[in-house]
Image (tube, rainbow, N blue to C red; front, side, top):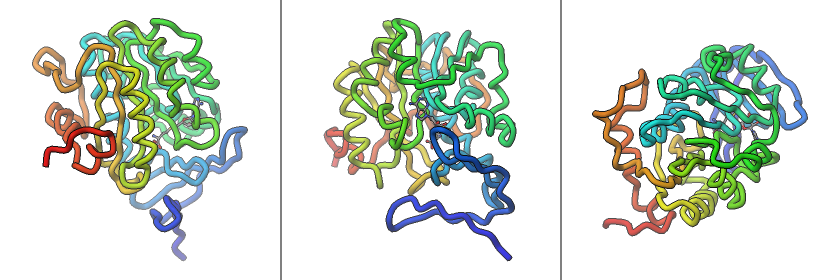
Length: 280
Ligand code: SAM
């Protein structure tokens, strides 16, 4: 008998994957957590019924949320990841030799434990001595910091429960204050096909706070519609002006300088969404 898992991504659309086994399931104080072993994408972390990451396609999201800003900043040393308890973003960040400290502010310890136990290829860098794991609300953590981070990555769940505030103007303003004078913010901002108003709002907040703001895209097969957006706010550096020749390449599967540049080429409907003049 075949077993299938379906994530109901919207009222009218879902992603179905053939399942080998259910490895783990628990109700944490924050969410319903499951780890499934799937035929197509390997092991998969699911929170509140929504796919967070899979062994086979995680590299797209984790490389794209991190390397774009890590190459844009000429010397990133201290960075924070809010959310991101699976460890994938941390693993990518630590590939950059300039990094001295990564603070992971994850609210749900059970996510970190499940990733360590069931997703070792994703969580492998969590034990690196440069990583400080702070279990608690990322918003509270950021609000206590000033001039502390070169980059803050918001690697959040969808805006439900504890993650609602991670898409608010107040939080982006607090990140602005937690950043150094030339710091950068990157936040995952969902799919332009099914989360248009979220992108409009979140990117609008970031644009109203940071002198440089850019939206960029990547293709993540297991996320709703596959087309995913990231919103970047920067106090100084423009991700479209990176001198790649001056930078040492780190090993990646998806990201490279051409992908970096191409990710900022937005379809007209996405430009419209963020109020940019569409070149028609
Ligand atoms: N890559 C993923 C995606 O876009 O689907 C995100 C993965 S990561 C596992 C998201 C994490 O954000 C979850 O582990 C969740 O517990 C955490 N989170 C949600 N709200 C948070 C908050 N207020 N502070 C810190 N972490 C939070």
